[in-house]
Length: 200
Image (cartoon, rainbow, N blue to C red; front, side, top):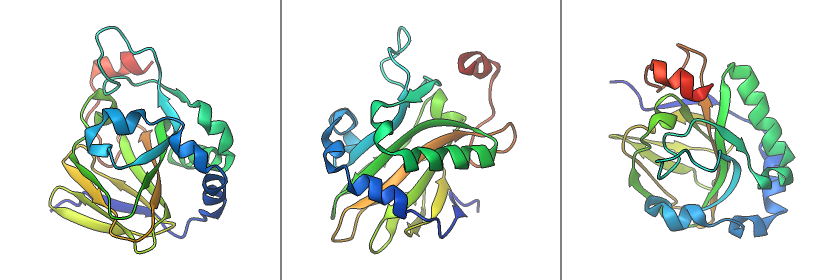
């Protein structure tokens, strides 16, 4: 059976990243559009670091098919986070997509869903665990993992997945997407000719 999860980093120094997050608690409430519009994420709080370019192309109701991403306004408050993203992108040889800091309060959950659309189809989804007292529970398909602080995971977000925070404190992850070099992805689908045109 093919695993839906891969741990690709361990013992990463997340202290500088957490220090920036803890120094800006008000930023969790600067943009609550994700909680309002994406029902499966309604218990989360987030800080956008990179977002889909807007305005969306004509006819697009959401950003699921939008390949281009840009730096979010909030990114300037988190230089260590941005530096980590650049470092991991450079080492992978891929291209950075969207990125967000995500908090899941104690006892809350991310409801089952799958990330569908052309943007997700050709990219890998990563989680860097910044804070999680007892470990972060994540399910994809019929498999589950518990991710620990300082670990970097990639997983198959194209299938149905869900998360829960079983701890007594808020869980914080840095979640981001990488467009891998051709043939180097973990859970990506084959690119189509139209993808090349839309990503150029």
